[in-house]
Length: 144
Image (cartoon, rainbow, N blue to C red; front, side):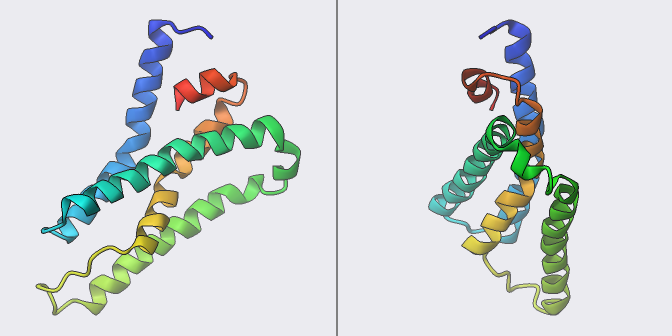
């Protein structure tokens, strides 16, 4: 494994770039529930961390081992991302219209919504896993 400064710097910048969408969704969740407990904050951070780590590894495993089975789904990946992000956006619009007069009542974000947010914000990380498929396992783990 070639651990040069450039490899390390690129890995850090890739991680920062991939985490920006999860960061913005976390901020929105925090603004939605102003008196969120520390335990819930840690849970939200944990969910996003697991998905941001797992999705590139899933992409790497898919390309490295079972790529022939996923070629049929290759053209559907943008549509899957569109459906997930559309679902989140549609749900936000629906709840915003439904609760238009109830400004004081803000529902807490549930575990189901957090899991969907975790998947939706880590779709780009899955594509990184596809891109690093020529790396060894150690390089892929370090890159993630």
